[in-house]
Image 1 (tube, helix red, strand yellow):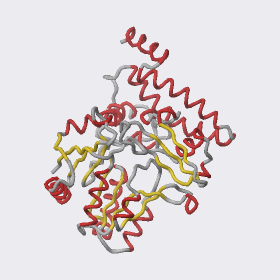
Image 2: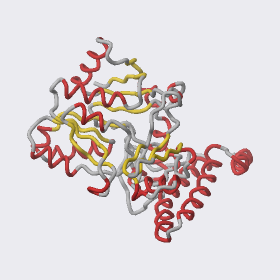
Image 3: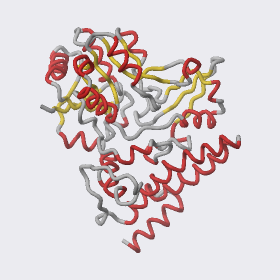
Image 4: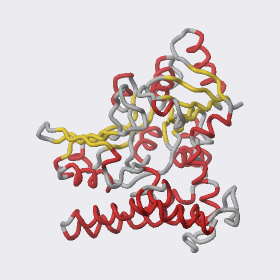
Length: 361
């Protein structure tokens, strides 16, 4: 069984709603999810933790684009009997299922998986880069908010906030940050170039943002939800009948449209990358290597994303080693200008690419 729905409400709100329902109805004893962490305690701004009540769950209910691991919470689940649900991106959810296949204790205790639609994951360098651009030393940052909520602004207008130890707060819209164009691939995990799972296909339920108009301009945010578990489907139907959650059925085509960029990157882009990227790695995927149907400009877009995702970490580390953040900023602005010209026809470079495309086809 697989059903899809659209929710008009705060972006990400459906994840919290379903998790809260599982807790309140006693279907689980804990929800494992990514929550803020004290950077002084472990050097990280976020980590996986297990929430056993609504207050703890609500404290962790926001977007996190930060590297984490599940080793600690899996050990806690092994040590503390109970029923658990795990929230995670597609690769984490698949890893949980593979681990459960070999571990009878985890298989008995992890009863639900809640998946998040994923474009790719970022390295921890992005936080420090944001700090450079906002005039904050990462060592002075106490908390990070990647997406501040503001119903008066379109949901796709991301605004980041860094909260300092002295109480000061710095904010900036992502489009003013050199690495703020998500699709360009700054600080992307290299493994993401070979992932073909956009909507967390192995999860009991998946949640994503509806990146299609008019929903992407709605400041309240809009979720798309794909349900594969009869028990969770019953929770949603009950909530709809009682008026506690507003959902509208949609078809697979609508869900795909909301994640069109992600599917292009993980289908035709993956097929193209399989032919040349990381020739020492030959993963088996549902798509096969091939690119004859792609035009030269689309190929260049995929090449640039690959270059940016690999080069951004090197440029960042060089700038950090020399104590000159401007090196990274200059490199990033140059690459972003090139990427925007090729992808969105912006500026003189864009006009030049448009002219070349008309001439070359």
